[in-house]
Image 1: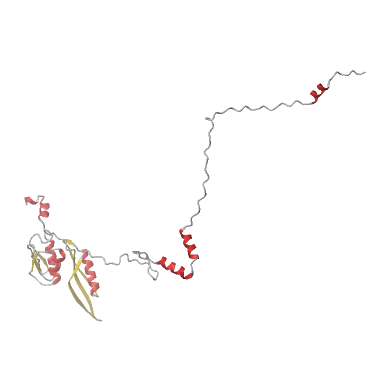
Image 2: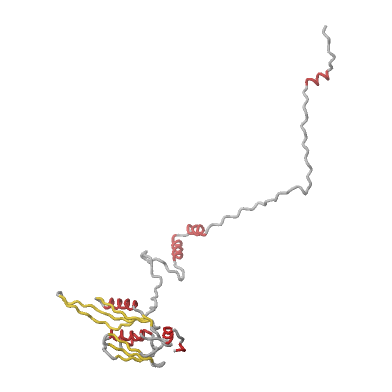
Length: 261
């Protein structure tokens, strides 16, 4: 007969049921209140209402207007502001005239003589005009020029351009008279120039007076001793003015002071 093992019920249960181990409990380190870092609280900002742009507001008003009010509004907006000048003309072209006021001329001009020249050809006579002009600023700057053309205005214009190219500086004493006596010659024309006291004025006539006035000479005595041709008299007067020398200029040429002369 088989032998029965002496096994109790408790031992059987222990063998059949598996042993389950309990999970390990992690140890939580205790933290002090000083070690706890608090995050900053961000307050919720209410969204700002969108402001309509001025253009959108303006167009919104225009949509609510009647056609008559809309046209009046457009006309009011198109009116130029005070002191504003449109860069375009009514026909659409650009207005290039920046300043409508005429500019003040730096040089004054005077006519010495205008002569007509006739050329006889096989086909007939051809007329041309010659104009001699004097220009100056009245402060010692003066020039003479001659222009020729088929028309008088064009001849005068060319004479002024030629005179501007021949400007010379004249030496003056106290800005009113010449330093010394001088004689100017051109062809058969001779002009004598002498300094004068203050208040004497310009004692001259014709072409000589025009040259002296534009040169800025206020007190001078002159005398024409040769031919009376206006062009030659004007050129002789200018030659006499160009021959003027001041004491300072002579001292510079000699390498001395004005007191040593």
